[in-house]
Structures are given as C-alpha cells and as structure tokens.
Length: 408
Image (tube, rainbow, N blue to C red):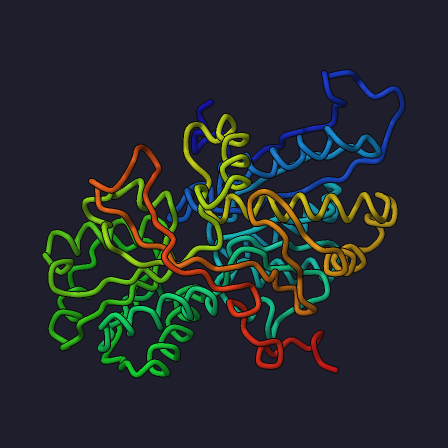
C-alpha cells in the first residue's frame, strides 16, 4: 500500500464494522479520534501517514476484541502552524464530533491545541511533543504526553556524549519551541556532566543551507555539534556535515533522531551516532510482533517511536473508553484522562508502564548507537541498544516538572 503525501493532506478513515465486514444491526455509539500532524512539511515522516496507520492498527485490534462502540479516525495537516492547528481542532470539536486528539510533531502546535482541548473538555494525546512545558508549567487535566520530551532525550544523549569525550559543545538549533527546549535541557545535562557550551546557531525551520552554521561550529573550538533539529532538517544538515568532513573530526550527537532519518541518509553517514528513543522495533519479541502486524499498513516502512506512540496511546485511550462506557467518555475528556492515568498501561510496542499525575507516560528510554554498514543484518536493522533508562529516571522529577496538577 502506498501512503502518498497528497492522500493524507486531509480526510477520514472509518473503522466502524464488526470483524468480517458485517454491518451493525442497530446504531451504536461512535468515538471519533483525530490525528493532527505534519503531512506536507519537514516533519512529514515523523508521524504523518505512518501515525495514522498505527492508529488504524490500534482501532482494528480493539474492535476485534470489543463490539460495544464504533471508532472512526479523521486526520488533517497542521502545516506546523499553531493557529492552523488550533482552528482545525476547534472545528473538529465544535462541528465534527471528534472526542480525542492524537497530535504532533511541533511543540508550539501541541501547546495551542492542548488549550483548545481543555476549553472543550476533550482529550489531547501527545506522541511527538518535545517541550517539557506540555506536562510541566502548561499541563492540563485533558492532556497526556506519551513518547518523549526534551528532558528524556537530553538526559540520555547529553550526559553519555560528555562521558565519551565530547566536552565542548556547539548547538545547531531549530528556532522554535521544539529546538529551544531541546537545547536548553541538553545544555544543562552537558554542564552537569562537566562539559561546556561554547556557542550555538539558531536557524528557521525548513532551511536548505547549513554551511554558515557549520562553519561557525567548526571555528568555535567545539569538539561536539549538538544537533537540536529534526525531520528533513536533520537529514539535510547531516548530509552537509558529511560534505564538510566534520563527521571525521567532531562528535555529532543527534538530540532527536528517528528510524526514518537513518533510512533516508544511510548507515555510511549515520554510523556511530548516538541518539535516544523510547521504542526500537527489534527490542524484544513483543516489539517485533507489533512491527509485523503494522507493516502492511506502513507501506514497507518500519515504525519509529512516534508511530509506535500513536498505536500505544490509541490502544490505552480505547481501553479507558471501554472501561467508562462511550457515553461517559464523550461527556468529559478530563474524566477519560483521569481514567487513563489510573489504569496501568500495557501494549506490544512499549510493554507495561504507567502515566503520572502530570500526564507524562513513564516509559523507558533507550540509548541507541547506529550500526556501521557491515554490522547490519538487513533492511531496517540499523541500531544497537547500548543502555536502558527506566521510565522514572527518563522523566523529569515530578517535583521539578512544574505541573499544577502534581501539587499536594
């Protein structure tokens, strides 16, 4: 199946039939899930069509077990603009009957739509939200962040790189909430580990030429370039790093990197890079089983952590709706989120976990090393897990998170 860009700009996918395609004898309640993501810009591969596919997989598996209500999935492109995202979500809630939102990437969009969600008392489920404020100072009782945040990515990657000799850092950072949050969190862990930040360059999202920033990093005296950027920006920047030969002279920790980035650039360029992820498809038997099930929907691409997050958070949301009953779930999104926090989570992508009072899912973080071409056993065998951080350690301490919901 081909998941083309144009196909996913806007539309809906219904999953309202019983197994075998039999029509329901009588009308049943319908829960509608909206997937809001980048379907046309720099982050198209981070969630986009793959995220929709994984939500559809969760719905299909749920409906094979449950027959008490129907589930529909709608989706739209936020274009990496907070006002566009907020307008779509408001329309979904006001006129299109959407009950829950799965959204990302882009932290500015995530924060904007979380406030609309609270106002409308719906459910906002983040699967690619970098800003720690989402479950920190700007948390809401209607929101959960599942897959990662800046604290998790920074703690594992920053401290480990300093320990391996990367002591003088220069950051190249996307000038938005995503990049600035990631740089700030990582710089703190670098300094706590005995490293030093000697400079940084901020660039506009979607830049094509990184030569000015790379030359500044090269002349700064840094031995490490912290890449606080993602999506196609990261891919393009790494290609230029390779052209400049900086990969031979400097450490290059990718502060947020995804499986599809490695696939796009290739092991020859990416080999040896350290990065942090909360999901790797070849981690264990359960993650491999999930991957096998979802591959037919993914058009041949393997799921990364944001895709897996869409599957897991949709699965847990539907379990909470089933426990409450669809009528109660539709009355109050805050009540659904409270039930999700009260229920232990367990799915094939992430295994057993829990959700804290601030809405942060306590899932492990894995420090991954990108394999050299000779180490890879075949397509998509790109990474080796070299360290594991448990869910509690990977999340910012609750007392320091700043979420009003967590106050005594």
